[in-house]
View (cartoon, rainbow, N blue to C red):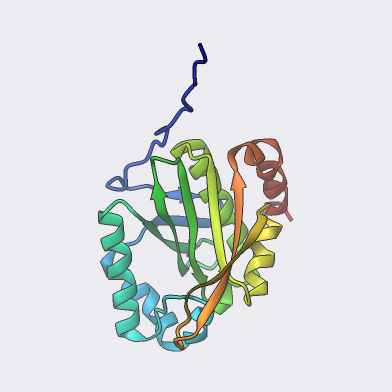
Length: 210
């Protein structure tokens, strides 16, 4: 008789109703609130091209209000967990990021909807955010896989994800609409739990020290 062993499932230790704060000496990520529009509105009003490659724009006051409300509704449904990003070095709010497409049945999550104001791009802030979120995902949430996606034209974003240890898996062809109504291809990347434990965590931590 052949006995089929069932894989361990539902190991995720995560409750979207709880308040999780992630921080190190450079950055603090705390749960996004409706009132955070006051911190993020300057980006919406003055730096609309931040969302050039995003499927969802937060440009303008209405755009930012809708962006925050949608993120919080998805959080209430247990699908997303959005953060606001605070840069400790400048003592200023820098942008937003989130876990999304949270799937406890598969022990997987996506990391994205990440954007920063121009003054915070290329400063190393993103690596600190990604380290904290990956550490939380693999070591607290208990996921087996973290997925990332980017517009295939956004080579800067793809290069940044590869630099933190992501593996490019392929391209989803014409999988969504851009803000101008055209279709876009999305590059899919990921990090697995075993990769985090074996080398990604150590290598990324070393880059934080640069």
